[in-house]
Length: 288
Length: 235
Image (tube, rainbow over all chains, first blue to last red; front, side, top):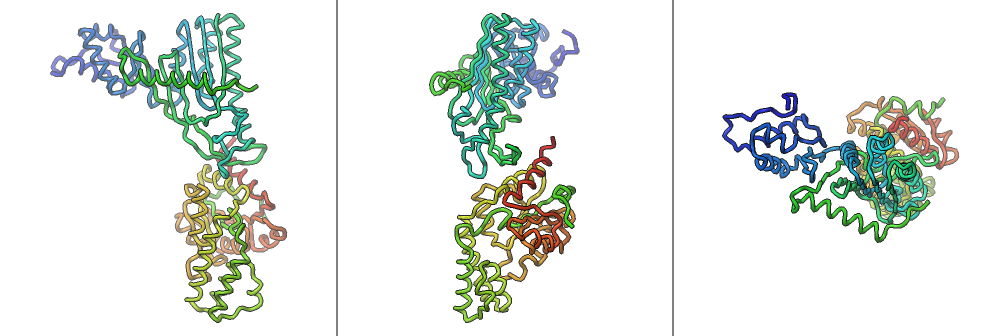
């Protein structure tokens, strides 16, 4: 440990508060001032207990304080991370990249276009291609609205009705990103870079109102799609549409923690349950 | 000599829109001739003369304008109110003008304040905007002043009032209207005017009235919407 790390090497000997509270305070300050970035891993419990000369239980108590304040998330076996709660989709990337650093990788996505998903997968898939990541299995499931069926969203704003031209535009965007992901993952399998690579997309006939990512069945990201009106150009004509807009939405982040009864663990469990229920019931084969 | 739409729009900010025509057809399901006849009936019932040119009038606003010439404030207020009620009824069956919504939404995203300057009753205008979920885009609505039809466009006052309400300058604004009275009112105040020639023969009349540019045909607003869309989303 050097003094260039984001937290001081010593606790103040004159501070009358319990050591756990003091450790929580220095970590909180480092998080709030961004010396630890969102998504970044905190020093291990072992490191912190050595640095401050306290018992592991004291460090655990400090981390519990920060977890209760929703400043950090703790992940089974891999430590404590600064929560990415207020992050734009960019906050998703480090977590997706980290999720690929496993022997068996799974990623479930439910949402509208898969544009953010496509972006977030680019780097880890490149790393596999370059031989820098070597998972044995990669399983990706993509759950999106059926573009061949009438949609309530996106729709033509003036009539609030489905419009095949508006839908075709959404389909082009969705298809581009979805197929890019499916092709890339399948290619890794065909090249033998990932012994067991599967990627599948299914469609449903519900409106896209939120997006959900589940990483390795342990972490979930959730964001609402606000409905916005804007003009788009279809066949050269401007058309005002109501559109689900996910680009700048805040993603909520939950991770299964050591604490089995935590709220975050329940969120991840319920997200998995919901995803599987959709996937195995009303979802249909992706139309080609 | 008119200029191009792009040329007239360039360098302006706030967009002033006439209502009946550029945004919707107010009397699409309730015939305007019927409303005009009802107003004439009120005039006759009050013993007011109805000359030949008024007897054949199908535009209720023209009947109201004539009423003001009679210089009977009570009767004018009464006819005005009757028309107000009729407009409020008619608005439920108003049909949106193609690409009007696109003009409004694209202008909003381009950061241009939007106002409506109309000779119609503001109650009917707000009812339409509410039903069409457009109120959030409109900074100000100037309807006709109750009991004072003589202050309707082409009188410059509605345009001047709107500019004051927006806290802007005439030279910064551009107005879109489909009648010579819109063009006259705008030009008198010093606002650039785009004539929306939605019927045959209007191009000439709007040009003569002093329109800086003309957009023509049932899809005439598409080009305006396209220019504003590109302004909002520069390639």
